[in-house]
Image 1 (tube, rainbow, N blue to C red):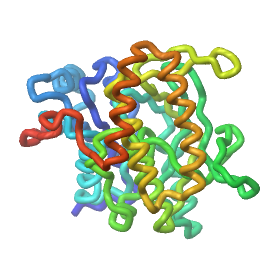
Image 2 (image 1 turned 135 degrees about the vertical axis):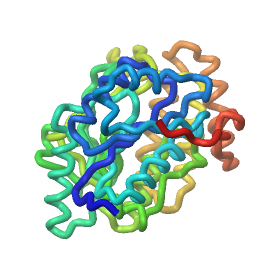
Image 3 (image 1 turned 90 degrees about the vertical axis):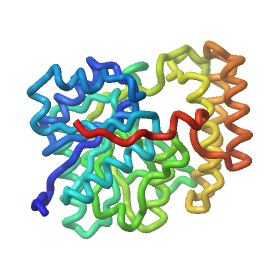
Length: 323
């Protein structure tokens, strides 16, 4: 086996991506990591990802493409990449969505924080970047549990230098030591999309691993498909999702609430957050009736424990093809 001590494999999950944005992401990542693997969940008949990277020969020397042939979901696609990193002896795996854009030194900063913490005997499960929503322009802080507060709160990224211990994060821009997965396990594939990362973070913390965010690593990331205006004492922009995506978000939130390894006080605080989401989507978003329909369906399926894809045929992969 090749000695890849301290090496990083970047895993990008793609599904019908905007090709221009994907190429920008790949160029940024490949200047920072040893290799990158695209797991393409797009339908077998669509060749946009392959055509895009072939059009940029400078990307090909350290980039691999695995075409799944159908949408197997974010959890299954991430697991393919994570298992590749483990099997090939990489020290770290860096996970990314297709609609992100890392700062030029993001990976180096994440690895530096991970190394410093590990050198001090900390059981690191994750180090994540600070991110800015590319749709609303909103800068997100880190979700933390303050010692003097019962519920979690948000700490501004610039107040967390050089790092802060967090409760959860997001998939994109997340660096994991590969050895962690032997203890914690892989991502949940049956949830398909949404809250897959949050469930894993809670599972890791329940097993004694610690999670960190650092403002020294910065990621541009798009949440949702568009934005709309919501009245919260004043008008503000809110990230919008399709009705079908709302189904997964509300269903998997209910499934998450049923997990025993998720702390009760986190559940209570998160429920308040999701009441705010329901208020925004059902009163202010476009397609309010469709949103209501899929939200109610998601809540009901979560209560009865239904998992998987809304379209069972979409989650049946063809034999993966590597390029």
